[in-house]
View 1 (tube, rainbow, N blue to C red):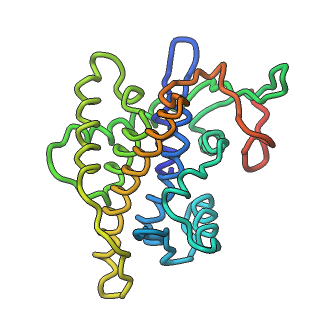
View 2: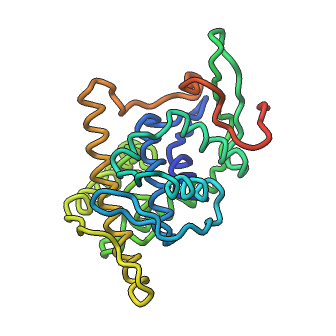
Length: 266
């Protein structure tokens, strides 16, 4: 699973009658950010003061991330972080839902309403796999020790907080303490100034440079996501809502965003 897959699984809230995806509009930007985080951890990109820069064009194990890397490498001029995040397609959550479906982590029924829009009912989810993610999240949220942002569990926790997923991971009164800890954790990293300049790529410096690059990128992602959500909320879009599965439709024109041989539901 990529960090994006894990974010979406955390965003799914099991209920008595249906499974909801929380904060869908916020989530798609965090999914977009997670792809940069994964590529940075893989040593493929870095983010300078102005541009996302490709360090290594070799494909990674995940096909989607390899496609993202290829797109970044072909972009002329290289995109800036803010612009790249803002261009997150509205279909991104649906695309990641299809990925989870391919991994047998969810079962989805798709149908068309009278207006012709495709609706997605999440029929079931892999609860043991989601619990494993929550255990990993706990290892960060409950820890008082310092961690590097090269820790994939910490990146997951910070992006989950940025996307407004703390109530999905830790619901109700019982989860209040952990929600506060997640907020404090994100605030700590948000307030640390990011280093300037780009990451050096000389062989002798590569290992330390990639670590520093991941730290810088994670803090930049938190800052840009915070600004992005604030801009949209101020504009009256109200990104903090949750979407129940019965009312969740695939937005935008053209297709479902699904890859592979196509699922027709159960």
